[in-house]
Image 1 (tube, protein in one colour):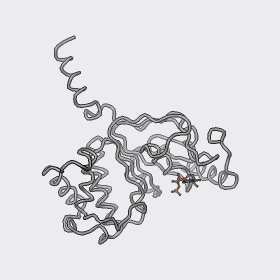
Image 2 (tube, rainbow, N blue to C red; image 1 turned 45 degrees about the vertical axis):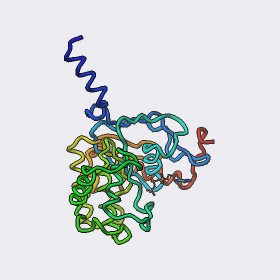
Image 3 (cartoon, protein in one colour; image 1 turned 135 degrees about the vertical axis):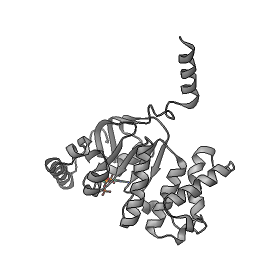
Image 4 (cartoon, rainbow, N blue to C red; image 1 turned 60 degrees about the vertical axis):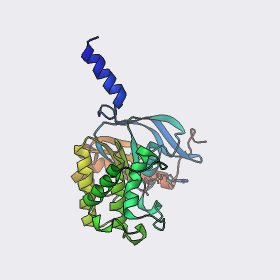
Length: 263
Ligand SMILES: Nc1ncnc2c1ncn2[C@@H]1O[C@H](COP(=O)(O)OP(=O)(O)OP(=O)(O)O)[C@@H](O)[C@H]1O
């Protein structure tokens, strides 16, 4: 083997392939996720390619949040499996955060560095500079020393995005990041997502606003317990496929199917 090939292999091993951007993707195989004897997600297979920017859409109860929590490693598959390559960061729905937690806005942004250094190690000057730059990027520099309890819902979401910027993961999972957020904040956070896209990060975002998805997300998974369609957004978000997702939702609302795997 040529010396240059050995050297390249050594660098790849030392840095990890994910850092080089070869494999920060997520793949699911026959994934079934249950609550008691009902499947929220049933036999889903597919792949979120490295650097893809995918929206997950579907009617209420389609299994979108359940899928995201399984991709984040919070919910265990009842059947099938998930292959995740690269460091994964998860932004849960805003309503899950306790605003009374005694943290300043800067400390919340700095929490993104804990995944690198662990909670018991000191934060470096570089971490602090990164947190300040992330707060500037989301337009929150003036609030850096304020307690998070002083923030509005939209400002808090900006601070949580600053945490994600500092975390610098390869795969980002975002559950309804724009719910109850005004249009200025949505524009700012979409800008951050576009920048992550240019950086080659893999993003998977649960959304409800179909026009937003058409405008900003190149790939879409249309979910209604299983995949109705998964691919390029214009081919997925067609009237017949959206109608099919709604038809399935009507069916499980009227007659939720018992699932053999979940039993
Ligand atoms: N903790 C839970 N216990 C029992 N059933 C649950 C639980 N969480 C979700 N479910 C059920 O699983 C199904 C999928 O829920 P999920 O929250 O994943 O859907 P969703 O597509 O994110 O919905 P929405 O658009 O309303 O947020 C629903 O039928 C829901 O009632």
